[in-house]
Image (cartoon, rainbow, N blue to C red; front, side):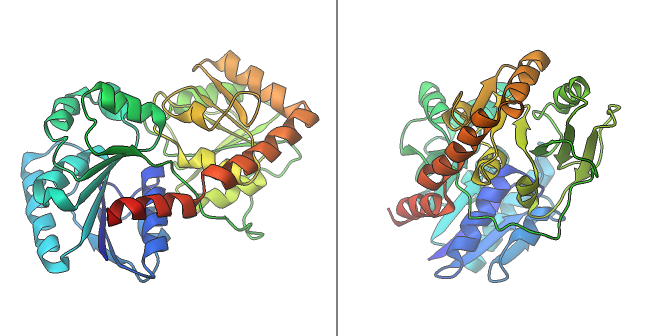
Length: 341
């Protein structure tokens, strides 16, 4: 097959990691092209066999002139590559792509429907209007699937959970702290809805631990001495091997890849109870989900990191859950089933 994967931004993010996993897994037996904006870590994650195409006018914000140019650019690429499958990721290109391409070749993955349903609600009428402009619509969690159905987007809709490849440990990397404190890590962009300020406030309440955020070089807020931002790093998930706990402070989510990557290393998780997070971060089993409150995060972090028996059980359970339900092989196989249909 000729498969075209299209995403709005090429920066760090869970949707980008899903795309790169699909592209790299499929490029051996298929011709695969990835289309996105330029200058992002996504390009460094792709196999050399993947054809890479940059569209400079493709952007997240609404821009009638750039959006029109992007539609023409996508149509030109379509005529040249002649794909059998066009897989759209993210809401902006999900709209533009459904205008540019034939609907019978389109698979559209919604990486967190709350970004449309709550945060950018002006997209919702467009999503409803274009619900039949795709052969298949994929939700990444039961939470998103049910909310899509509640909004009347239910034709040819299914669920495919995100999955991760086995990540090898890397002895050449290190965290920025040179002390014996336990390390709490986030791998995420530090823009809304990721709520960096909540992460900072939690760090301020727990000076006995190191807090590391990979995905941004800095923020507008002053940070305590036990918090470091490391910026965007290619294959940042390797750093989960060096941490003791992962947390995620979000206002809304789909099914975060960073949580699954942390769990693949046996790292328990404390995360905001949003989106499909509670479907994989199971209270008392693989970690805890909480409301976005500093005290609640602090309480669960302390509960896990001060109880060796609980920590060991959770560490075992996270690896078990990933191996059984959240591997890249499972995800790729389920998407290939959709492609073939």
